[in-house]
Image: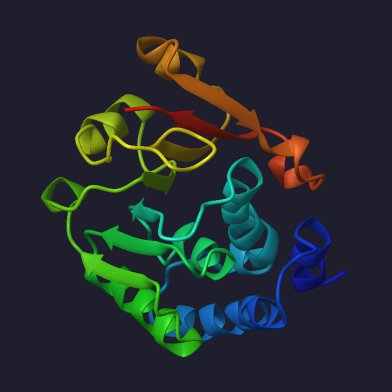
Length: 209
């Protein structure tokens, strides 16, 4: 099955509009990648699983309620923020990256898909003043360093099924990185949700700041 069918298999309640936006993603990124390389050529061949479905693993851990504010730190070309913004159109997404050309790609994809719930900003996360309900990211650095960047960026009052905090997509062995945060982290195994081999060592860390 193609990757849109794959998304529909794992998320059967998506609307036609959502599926249409997911269907446009690969071609949009192929076109942008010709101008600004944000995804390796090898990875483009597995774009749907490695980037879109990987981002959507967060939606297997939590279904954000409407009006939730989520910041994607080190978004790169827009992952996990863009797929999550399609998945949760009634939530607000702030996608930040310090590299301008990456934010240019995010803006291009956002405009092509008319994602009015997305704001893209070229900045370091330390400079962001607004507090969020959740912070998401795909392993931009070691976990302790990431926590130091975002430690004062979340709102205290929680409305979702999980307490406000960080949802961090990470692979491999990182038990040592989590030791300083014992009792405040929950680790979810992505193979519990998705059967593709790519996810064999992939996990989501939920951390309450």
